[in-house]
Length: 67
Image (cartoon, helix red, strand yellow):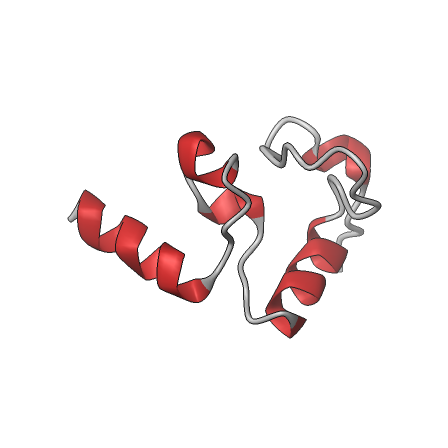
């Protein structure tokens, strides 16, 4: 299994929450947000990510708006 490293994920991570200790660590980030019933920043367009509303309801609205 491939290791999840911050360096390899840096170019894909669009998280703007600066004090986040999980930034660029996808495995940890996904687990953290899922425990909160949320999704990580990378599931959202940049404009939505900046609102920090990572809820499943917001994700559904984004998907519906893009359909």
